[in-house]
Length: 225
Image (cartoon, rainbow, N blue to C red; front, side, top):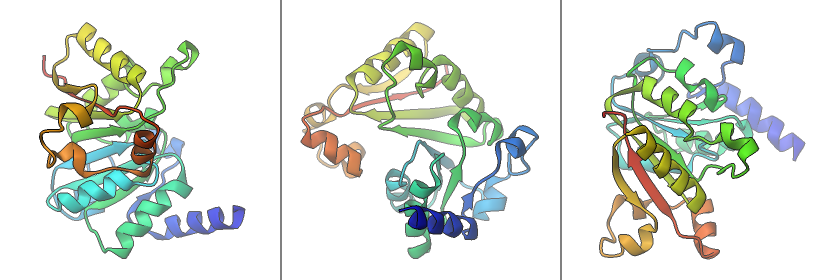
């Protein structure tokens, strides 16, 4: 397994659409900031981020559906990112990139207003209070997202965790932020619409959670009060 990981790390380093800046590079003022369209994609188009993208299943699926947009999957695990990066290379997809870094640095990786939307798919809910600072929808992370999103930009949270769903909705309501859509069970509440976008992409973990009987929840929100 160690050899496989090493080979994937080496492969990542050879792929132009995989960016792996050091923490120091980012904090000292990364030259990529504000230049994603020109430097990475060679065009100006709306940018969608998937945070905690894992193997990049959602990133790749959305990029296939929307070739007119640019997509960046973000995760710290290089061995996981490799799967999506390899798939994008194999299919010669020019609207997909992957960024290997901590999500806490996301507002240092993109310029204000550079991002059009953010997807957070099946994150660790970090249920223990001692881990609350790591929840990807806590107030500190929300502020980071607000900084990099263009006016009117949206955040999408899809999760099997009733706790994460309830925590996020409650926090948004407490902050007075707009919630555009909220479903506590998309299979039941959107059963009438089999073609709804939320039904069209199912990752490995999503299928696993469904098989375990977990309801899949969804929240779409923004920052325009």
